[in-house]
Length: 491
Image 1 (cartoon, rainbow, N blue to C red):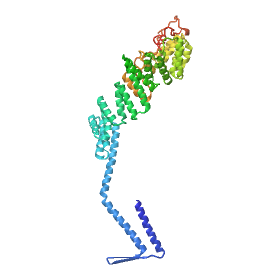
Image 2: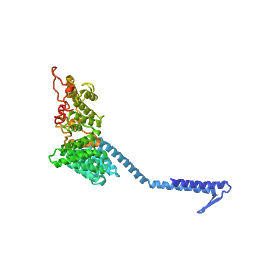
Image 3: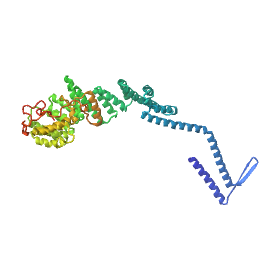
Image 4: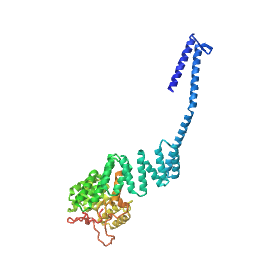
């Protein structure tokens, strides 16, 4: 294009120069003799004749070239048409496969195979996905297996074969493909996740920890998710060894739980297990330090119960002082308010307990959606104030009320976070992704610790009720097996 413009400018300059010369009175003469012919003309006419002849010759040459290149142009046009048709077939095929229309996807896959030559990988992927959408598992498996012969397609082939194996219930085969893909590609997050879930379901926490560390090094997961996953996995490891009769394994459990608490001081399961093991080893001060640190970050009923049981040989006043110290670490939290209610009841001050519990429950048993735990607490307060009708109303309300998720983490036998390996696997995945605890016992509606106190089931008008000053409290010489045993039912 630029060369043509330059030639045109050059010819125009020559013509302009000749015209200017002619207009200045020097037209000049030009003559040509050829085969006995002689042509004589002015210089201006000769220049224009040369220019016209040149343009005519160029036009004739371009016409000849256009005729010669016609077959090539036709072939190029046909190829472009096939390319557009092939791209359209691929697009429609992938959309049909995504919509689950296997027959349509296979039809477009066949069209794409006939039309597309430059992107065979896409055709193979579409063929496999179309077979899957059509429910033809053998054909899909054959298509994915064929991909393994091409280095750039091995990862896609492995993933497809893994999904087919999972659909058929062949977990070993699926894990074999996931392991091969994880070894091939450093960023195959789907393969890493499949391996991690398998290790967790099997309760192989050590292997799961290695996978999380490897994913962090490969930058498959973010550091914060990896840290949460490691904290949960370490807690699961500790829980699996906590009840073992072998002292060495219990020591290992304490090490795992301590690492979990160190990684995430606000992770209640890790802190609870670590504190429980420390208390069993006679290291209550260290356990208290862990509980205090966790309470500042994320209060949980399991932490409160451990704090309650740290000491048994103390007077009610001394224990109430410890309750207040724990609540003061995070005074704005809901769990701290529960502790302050317990403190007031222990000090035989039901009026203060009611004032503290009012924001939790409203002003009457008809408050909207009180939980069973709140109903039980209000029943204890009413019983301490010698208000049997109100206590009975709160008990009736609590019988049909919803349970609190955190409270369900406590096993009826008194051990918090007594999860099965499957529950720990779900907890690790959920906590790593969102930072939130799951509550498997509540989800499955399993038996959990009662949130309602064991008060008398009926009241008689002639009965003498306990006044506020007679509220059941710890005897200085009998704190009970859990510290607050006289307060039946806990909180």
